[in-house]
Image (cartoon, rainbow, N blue to C red):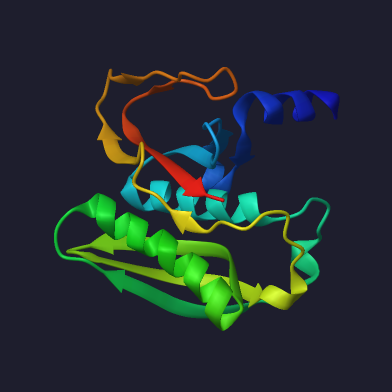
Length: 176
């Protein structure tokens, strides 16, 4: 059991859907908080960035599996830059929590032609204990891009590993 804790600390937050490791790490910033995420494709990266953002908000030691979930289809659109589309999606997730009391737990997003559509599961915000509040998603140091085979994304932070392609990586900083 100890090796699992060490493994989690070395690799960030690891999940094993369909046998694949997909991960995100909270990364240092000057005054705010950020994450670096990796995925095997753009949709997986968007999922990791979304779930990573939501995990930052949570206070520890909560049994989220004991809360009744609801499902829905959420979407956002933006013609043009995919990075702005992703920022709009993350903003929408925060907006739904703040205005509609819908705290996203899981999502299956699909990016296509200036649109993000996602099947989501969410719970009432009132059933969640929050540690911090994210005021905004920023474009400061934002990245959302493919990493070619043989390309390495190096890390400037000891707690965040480097990433060897192929795959996708993203960086996002949140104003708290």
